[in-house]
Length: 530
Image (cartoon, rainbow, N blue to C red; front, side):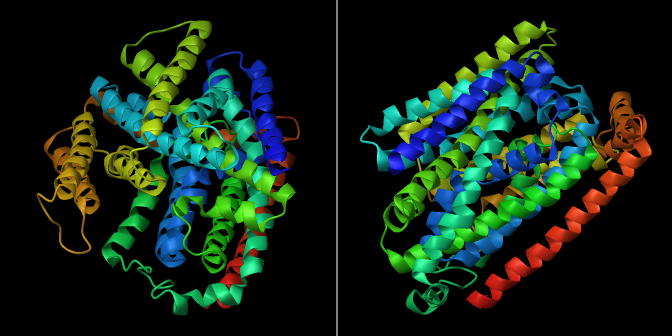
């Protein structure tokens, strides 16, 4: 029964993605959904993108083995703060500047070919890594319920994704993400509590006595606290600038939609994670010794949940993978087609030809990711850490400097991004082969972020921005999304009443979710004695 329900729900995702393609009439529809995204759609796509295979498989497996504090308490809290930063700060500023992709911002900010090439290349490398994670996760899920070789499953999954991501662009991704969000919510709100209930919260709490260090800051693996803190820092910096989250802002109708979606979406993301992570710990009570640990939630649904719900849960798990993977396919395709081909080469294509190039680029990306996923070079968790670190050390310092520092120049951007990513990769490999060692609690991530920031500051001070860069900096400071939103609403009939209504709704939603969050998190903190 669970197999039937699983395939029915996944088929609904694919059909919805195909139907949505009829709305894609031009480049704006393809890249930013014509900026028609409602609060519901932005909440859906934001939450669905946040909850990926990394959460439901990679992190769930780490928490199952090592305990929740080191990974959920630090890494997930960092991801939550990073998501707020991505939506409220980076996303809103870039949307106000009419950016359709993140490298689009670098192109507008500096008008320098090498800045665009380097930033886009970093984006492609990072997203390819994160995309591989999703495909491996899909193969793991499907192999549990189908007797089909892993490489064939990866290929079929890739083809299914291309149906709506390549054809529907951002329209297809946002609509299907929202549908998928509700099945993911079923995992957190219904299935996870069922697993927790069978184990018992008291038994979960007692794991600290059964598995030494399970609820400690460094986990049962007794990882160095410096490493644990680096996860907190990495997820803030990664999620704060990752295109998969920042780009969720671009399709929004206006600033009120973004602010409401930030409150609601950023509540649901950690809410779903919280219950999933406690359920992962509950599985250590019910079934210790699951190998590989990435399968923990699949085993939980197949063995401890009624068949009908298990089918919905597996579909929700697949939804978390499909939503993030489709986003990464779309964004990497955008990077190849729009940011490298159109912006760097300064080609002005017709609407029809631009859409063809954008779709072809996604096919190329899908082929590359599919091949890497079939090779399966590492576990889901460690691939995600590597991909996230690349964004954190190479992009975040440059983005903040570009938005806030008047002396920021193209030379500083190039130097900072290059120094960050080269330091991270080179010293990471030297450490891996035992050529060098770092002090306990310090690793190549810390070194790379320090080098990236220092390089940006030093080069920024010894060089001067050109007239264009100074002019665009001034334009950024004068351009605010809130101002344009207010003007557009006041221009409508009864605009003043509509503006007052939007303010009231936003404040009410914010206050309500603060109260809900305090009650929910307070309950689990008290019950688990954390």
